[in-house]
Image (cartoon, rainbow, N blue to C red; front, side, top):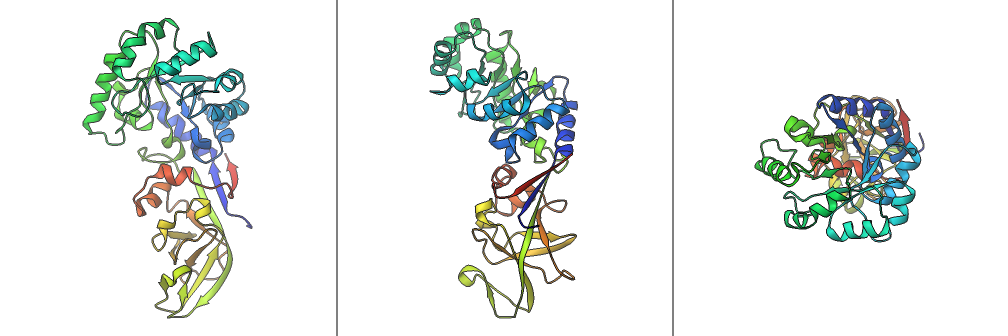
Amino acid sequence: MAQAELQIDLGALKANWRALDAMTSVETAATVKANGYGLGAGRVAYALAEAGARRFFVAVAEEGAAIRAAIGPDLPIHVYGGHMADDAATLRDGALIPMLNSVEQLTRHVEDLPGAPFGIQLDTGMNRLGMEPAEWASVAEIALAQGPTLIMSHLACSDEPDHAMNAQQLATFRELTDGAGVPRSLSATGGVLLGREYHFDLTRPGIGLYGGLPFAQAQPVVRLSIPVIQTRAVAAGESVGYGNSFVAERDMRVATIAAGYADGIQRALSGKATLWAGDTPCPLVGRVSMDLLTIDVSRVDGPVEALDLLGPHQGVDALADMIGTIGYEMLTGLGPRYRRVYSD
């Protein structure tokens, strides 16, 4: 192995979609934004379409164009960011459906692409995207007359099932949309797990498809194996890496491997992360540098050719917990220098 390898199990991805789909009696779409959560949007979307997904969601129009090229002309692709200035050609050519977030976007869409499909996104308390209740009340009659394909909102605390915000947003969403006569969607992965009252007509899971929490039963989708460039003996009292931040307390064997913070392995993992040689844990010693990590492989018998940062012993959420972040960030930060290898 000459290059760090990100192994992506499309079979596990499909199994996760099917498992989430089986939890509801409504349509299950798939969110494939951020380059398919870092795993390659085209390959991910195509696999999910094979699994049974018939509707996709992305963040911005340009992402939608990439998905359209992968899945063909027929399946709907929704754009969470709505209709931004200069999006008209991309939306039209990709047959994309913007989720309009404001009166300004609604006006732009009707003027730039009259008769083209659209959806509506409402803000039910997250204060991030979507029309607020008063804004929606002012244009609801006009917007509904144009025939939106979907009305959606997004839960702020669905990864905390007992959080009061969930029930509050559910009630607000119902107040704003009951009787509208339009298909509705409130739930991503966390909302699927909250139960039937949150499912409405369509769910749109994201992180759970890729093996992340809050879908604890998800099959792992990624394995990151990093090749060893060089192994050296380090004597007690010698330091390793920038700033002499690690000083060996004993004689040890240290492997230098080919990945670093330029590849999404955050510098905050310095001195905290563990990598794996098969079933043997190997601590990261010294600082994470741009292109390299230094790993204590003293416990491994024989030569070491590669070490796993992600794999059966450690998923993205376990790695994220070490530095107080979330699996989403670890996953979407996986860099372009990894050779992506797909299996099914």
